[in-house]
Image (cartoon, rainbow, N blue to C red; front, side, top):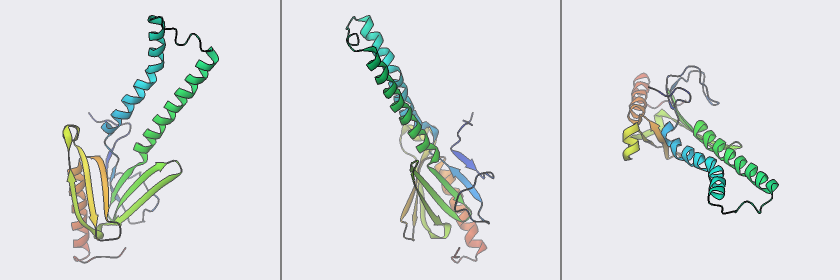
Length: 194
C-alpha cells in the first residue's frame, strides 16, 4: 500500500516543473523527505491539541479549582491564542516538509531548501560536476521504512548536497549514476558546458 496524498518519491513526473528548468531538461526524480519523518511533530501537535481539555478535566475531577478564580474571558482568550499558535506550528512544519524538495533531472541536481514563506534557497549543480555520490540508511526507522541520506560531492564551488531522509536512497544513487553514465556516453566522455 502506498501513501498517495503527498507522495515523497516521484519517478519521471511529467506534470511537475520548476523555475530554472531548461527546455530540454526532463525531471527524472522528484523527492521529499519520507512521510514517516512527520510522525514526531504530528504526535507532539496531537498531544498539545488534547492538553487543555485534559487539564480542565483534571481540574474538575480532583476539585483543584485552578481555573475557577480566572475569569472566563481570559480562559477563552488564552485558549484561542494557544490554538492559533498550535495551528501556526503545524502549518509551518507541513510547509517545511512539503516544499523542501530534491530534484534529479537529466542535466542537473536541484536542492530546494524552504525556510519560510518569505525565504528559500535553491542549489543547482550539473551532473558533470558530481565527483562522488553515496547513500546511507541508518537507524531502525531508516531500515524499516527504507529511507536515508544521499550525499553528493562536487568539484564545483558548491561542495556538497544532502538529500536528507529521502525514500529509497539506493535507487536515487543508482539513477544519478545512470544519468551521469548516459551523459558521458552521449558527449563522448568529456565534460559538456550547459
